Length: 106
Length: 115
Image (cartoon, rainbow over the protein chains, first blue to last red):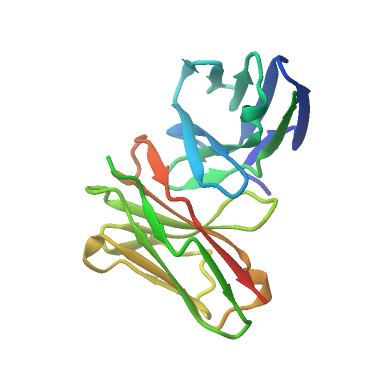
């Protein structure tokens, strides 16, 4: 049983497309994180959310606490957005999704 | 602010050998985590420290893995003896407090290949 489920697992998009990655979780949480992992690189924390919506540049993250669901949106996608995006939720420990591998084609 | 430092970046060993990884968290971060990330999977928590005490090591294979955080700062993770299935990236992360919604920071990881 996975406490955190992400969809889709893999996603290929054309440059400029609007992208949505979804995350559903089953545990009670104090915060939800969206992380970005480039091939061979470390993990970068994009957002930490406990309610509502956050925006940073072309990235938007939303969370619905009642439905235990979060989405990460990328507007005007670019090849440099190609990475694995991981959803993680936290109560006393972190639970991670398996990630969504995004490839943006020029 | 300096990030979470890990070393080495890469390590290749033969099965049954021993290996150790080192992590230096962000200054002042009380909570330190070690994760194992096998290719194609999300990270799996191995052990969580609060200062120099262990909070959760339920997923640590204690017959071969050990970790310590002396003085509540740096931490080392050891595998002895290594198996082929231990090939993975070992990530260290730190955060200010346990059970709080503070952000946390990952190191760049140590990629271990066991041959």
